Amino acid sequence: MTMPDVSVLKIRLHGQEIGTITYVGGEKTLFAFNDGYIENPDKPTLGLRFKDQFGELLTDFRPYKIKLMPFFSNLLPEGHLRKYLAAKADIHADREFFLLWVLGQDLAGAISVEPADGKAWPEDAHQKLDEDAVQAVREDALRFSLAGVQLKFSAVNDASAGLIIPDSGVGGDWIVKLPSREFAHVPENEFSMMTLARMVGMDVPAIDLVDVSSIRNLPDGIERLGPKAFIIERFDRMEDGGAVHIEDFAQVFDVYPEDKYKKASLRNLASVIAAESDHADVAEFIRRVTFNVLIGNGDMHLKNWSLIYPDQRHARLSPAYDFVSTIPYISNDKSALTFSRTKDFTGYTLDELEHLAAKAALPRKLVIGTAEETVALFMEQWGKEKGHLPMDSTVTETIDKHLATLPIVTGAN
Image (cartoon, rainbow, N blue to C red):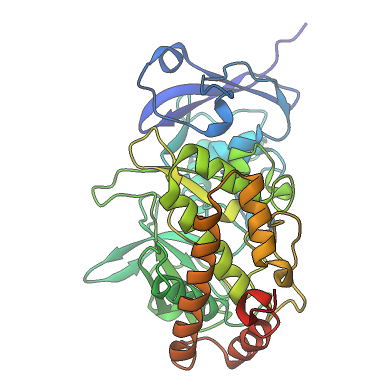
């Protein structure tokens, strides 16, 4: 009888080993916390998925086949970006244990992953690459390792030299998002929407719109699909190089990335935020939902909402990200997630908000008042700024038409 080929990845949180993912052959993996983490009374939080209804740590997990458990699967890129990276590493795109092996040095939040037995590449991954080639692939792949579909990567913003993509792919404190293959002028759109969000009072990281030609050390073979790139400062990185832990709501609800448009409603998110944080974060959540209805953003799925752990233990709503008006590209688009009963932007009425507040046990006055205030502030800023922001005129015209259909704007409800 032959023994399975066992490989182990060490999971670190804030630099401390907290557990392992073991590949036991037959494409099966198993996650386990180590005793030191389990017994630590002041343990940092890995994720809400690992707590029971009483806040106690869950420690018994089933094996997963091919895919990692959803929490770790959500750390990996999706779609075209995943296929690109998998091809670079000569791994099948579905073999998530080995993808995490390659990409684990610079993940979102304060998680890092490294092989327990040094850098030896497991024989079961593939037979083609020697160790030097594996390390070269790892460094190249890490330059594109942030989860998501759009081609984006981490960069260092040097005061004298500008944006530089690190050779090793590790250490960037800005995210650079290149123009989209599918849709025109997305960087300009996102910069405009995020600028408006800040004007309306939302928590928005530092952002900018830069010339693609000014970005140094872009990997070879990157198509120049447009002149501008959108950049946003990473809120999971500190000035001293340390990491702040975050998790997205696909991780919170323990669902795979392909189910990011399902499995939970915005009402469910509001309930979690209310339970874990405070009324200020509930208000910020309602502000963002309302804002994204007003701009017609149909892509605020579970991965575009995150929690952040500034003190390593207690969750707050993270800063805002990925605000794009999708209605210029997808006519009749709807909300990615159900509000309380509907996904239709026109169904985001005071009655729908009252239903959400009641079902999520939120203060009605807080929810309604925040939504109404956000509409008033948005309409004021939109009227003043829409002619000055760098978005395409089609975006401006589409949003103007969209606003006229919304009862929360017109007062029809």
